[in-house]
Length: 381
Ligand SMILES: [Zn+2]
Image (cartoon, rainbow, N blue to C red; front, side, top):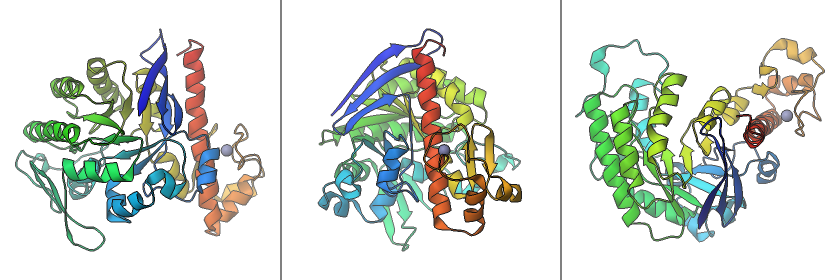
């Protein structure tokens, strides 16, 4: 069950305020979606996660398929009962792992390409296969990264797993292409993504909301083709996936080439993008929800996001700083502990250091988006 209502459309940009209603509660959009890969936010209790103002989380089908397996989760009554997280959940389709375990790993690139000094010959041509997996029209053959056993995931397997996991919102299986793919490769991958989208629609037997994923890399004509194709299928919302170009401008262009061709009444989720410096731009382009590992991943590396910029807890000078982590933040970490104490915990490698910083970073990101929502409501953005 999913109802989405756009309650306010900005007159200054394409930003919109909306309410995403699921059987596990209502999400006010635009919303940041923390990543709970293994049905938990790393280092946080479920209770703490609720207190970070997180409205919706995204879990990873591929990882949960490997362990504990969707049958174990289904037996427990689905992800909500299994984890006791009672707010909405999304699961991704596993398509991103095709990329991250495939060409992403071979070429050591993320989906946003920063530097590439390699040879033109290294670019991914139409018939090339990644080293560690095989992509076919039916799906993807892997080796299980845990025990090396052969593994196959295609659109049917992804749907079956996601329906057993029982999230509120599930995604169609897709192929996320690497930034270094040639045009013929991207075209071939896009055809697969579209074929798989149809199969996912046909195999849906649950009342979960199914989002179709638009791909097409950084090519305007392919994004246009993909948006129109995905919009022609009976999806409940959309994911914007894939390589979004190397620059902020390109990301902005891609959203402009995509979002206008989708059903405007349906929610759109930007997959795997949500750095603090990108948030305003993607929201102004009309994105409703977006997930990103930045706040949680950085926290575990000792980086706190604050109103004064990023703070590296490994810096010696912080050991002598009695100020709150972020004097402007109202979270329970900032109103309780000093930078000095937190820097000490980091230096001592105490586990609480990771959970305190994760808590603050998530609270900070969610508050940041909450303020953007307030600015849209006031007509400022
Ligand atoms: Zn804080």
